[in-house]
Amino acid sequence: MKPKITVIGSSNTDMICRVRSIPRPGETILGNDFLIVQGGKGANQAVAAARAGGDVTFITCVGNDAFGQQAIEAYQKDGINTSCIQKIDGTSTGVALINVADSGENSIAVAPGANAHLTPEKMEEFRDVILSSEIVLMQLEIPLETVNYVTRLANQANIPVVLNPAPARIIDKEIMSMLTLITPNEHEAKLISGHLSFACSEMESASEIQNQGVESVIVTMGSKGAYFIDGISHGMVKGIKVQAVDTTGAGDTFNGYLVVEWAKNKNLPEAIKKANKAAAISVTRMGAQPSIPYANELAEF
Ligand code: RIB
Image (spheres, protein in one colour):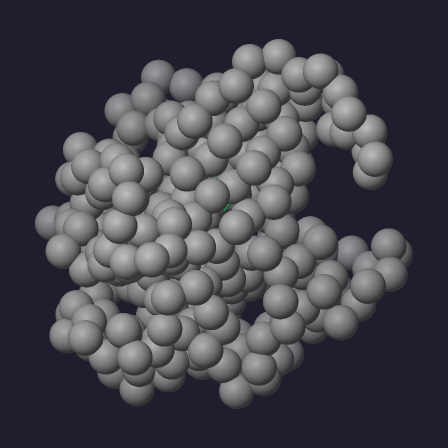
């Protein structure tokens, strides 16, 4: 049986320019090739969860425009249930302007467009879908009130909520205590834990975050791996070093794979291992969604 995952989040069209290095403020540089691909943290995680073998429903808003239509068709090709995707008149599909440097690092600016229309009122329409999920997965590229609303709803029904707190924002204490799992990267972990100093280790931030009431915490650290604490144990799951071409969407790949593997075997370190592998493969390729591997590729890696 495929685990039933509901992903609630953003859908963007990514416009990517390959550059030697990320331009500084005021600087104009000549880049290399230009690509338009599907992106958005919510969409990337939905696609990753589907390619990992989940039965995925994606709740998002797109504009009533060509980009929105292309996005829906792409999600359908990945077997994602798109019946909860709304097209919003008078606003564009979310767009992300991305520079990818030769080192694989990136800089991203997002114009949310229709993503800002994913309001708590809209969630009421999808109440039954949310309440029939095995796991709800969200990020922070949509209105915070929506994340709060869904967390309360799922929590009352004992449905696990996984939050990837990206881009980082301060989350209400009450909401933190309702989360089953939170998956910040090192920088997000520092912000959420309130320990902004460089000296603060991933262990300290993870335990500070857990003290805010979250059941389990995973701090992702790219190729170094991920540190986790759950109710049973804690530790580091080693990452995989690869030649990075583009790190865009690596965190999203990790989260999509993580929830599916976790739903299947309830073993967090094992799920992290698989998610690390999927993320490592994704950074060896260009673009967010085009780089997300299919489950069979993990066996060959
Ligand atoms: O996490 C990567 C994503 O962030 C990109 O696909 C872009 O759309 C932004 O949302």
